[in-house]
Length: 544
Image (cartoon, rainbow, N blue to C red; front, side, top):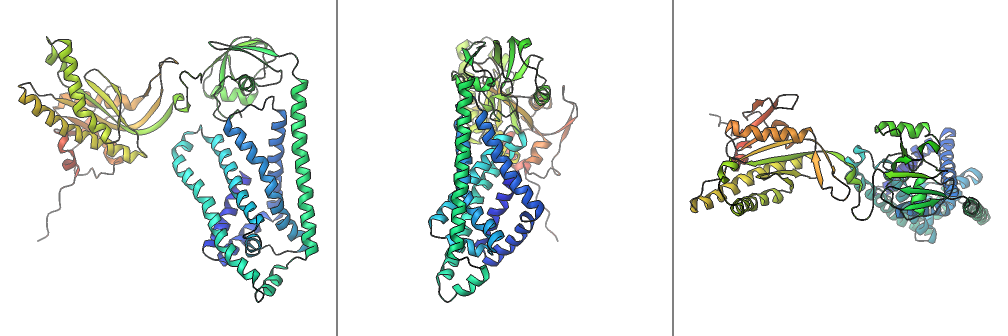
C-alpha cells in the first residue's frame, strides 16, 4: 500500500503537466518533501525492498510453477519493474544525492522525451500501474464493498495512466524544445545543475551494476526453486479427492499447489494467500495426521463457521495420505464461478400472480391450461425484459422477476417501468380474450427493493442461479395483499424513494406482513398501466 500510494501520487504529479510546468513542479515539491524526508525515505525504500524480497522469497519456495494465468502475468510484470526502475532511481535520487542534480520535472521529461529512455519510462508507468492494480484486485475482490465500487475503480484505473502519459507528452515536447535551443539551454543547465559527461558515465555504470545484481538475485531465486523441487521429490504424498482423482504431491507443498501441479481445478479467489476461504476443503479421512491450523487459518475458518475438519488448501501442507472434499468445485462440467459462491446486492424485484387461476382452469384440459399460461406470459414478459429485467423463476401461474442494473436507482426505475408495461400489456391481452368471449385475467404484483443473496443453489450439476433472502419474502407478502386490497400492484415506499420519486403526494397504506419484522408502507395501484401518471405530483395551482 505504501508503494501503491507513492505511485498514485507520482502519476498524478506527472499528469499535472497538462496544465503547466509550474503546477507540475509545485506538486513535486510537496511530494518530495514527504518521500525524501528521513522517515519518507525509510518507509518508501523499506517497502520497496521488502516487497521485492518477499515476492522473490515466495517464488523460491513454490513447489510448482503451475499457476493461474493472471498470477503468472503479475509475477512477470513484477520482475520487469526493477529492470526499468533502476535507471529511473539512479538518474534521479542518486544523481541528486551524489552530484547535486536538481531533478525537477522539467529536467526529467525534457531529457528523456522522444528517446529510448522515454519509451522505457512510459512502459514502466504502465507495467507498475497494472501490477499494482492487479495486486489490489486479487487481494480485495472477495469483499462486497470492492465489488460494489469495481466499475468506478476500473474507470479510475484506466484514467490515471492516461492522465500521466498525457502530462508527460505535453511537457516532454515543450521542455525538449527548450533544452535543444542554444539560447535557453545555458540558463536551464545552470538551474538544473546539469551533469557533466563524466557524471553521466558514472550513473550509467551504476545502473548497469544494479541491473547485474538484480539479475543475479533472480537467477539465484530460480536456482533455489529448482533445487528445492529436486530435493523434495522423494516421498510423494497421495491425496484422494471425493468424486475426483487421486493425486500425488511433494512433501512441503500446500494442498492447493498439489492440485494445480496435477491439473486439478481448485478455486482460490485470493490467489492462495489465505485471505479468503474459497479454497477450503473438508478432510474426510486423515485429519488426525495433519498439522494443526495456524492462528490465522483458524480465524478465517471460524469466520465462516466451518466445521472442525475444514482446512484451507492454500495453508495445509499434507505429509500423510488424506481424503478431501472441495467445498467449492470447478470441475469443467459446471464451473462453480465466483458468482456461484453467493453475493449480496441491493436491487428491485417483482412478484406477479394470476388471480383465481385454479377456479378459472377447473375442468379444462391440461393442454388448454398450458396454452393459456404461455399466451399470458408471452404477453407480459416482454415488458420485464424490455425494462432490463429477467425472470428469475416461473411459479406456476406467476413469476419472480429481478432487475440487475448499474445501481439501486436504475434497478428501482426498471421495476416500475416493467410494472407499468405489464399493466398496459394485460389490458391488451384482456381485449383479445374478450373478443374470444373468454373471461379477462386479473393479476397482483408486489414490488420491493432490498438486499438479496444471489448465487447458484442446488446440487453441483443442477444448480440454477437464483435469489433468496428477506426481501424476497417481503415482496411475496406484498403481492399476496393485492387480492385483499383489490389492486393490481403494491409498491414499497423504499423502492419509490430509491427511484428518486417525491412520495409526499402519494397515499400509502401501512401493512403488517407475515414474516416481516416491521410494518411496511406501500403504494396501492388499482391499474398498473396508470403508474407513470400516479407517480407525477399534482401541478401547482396558478397564482392569482
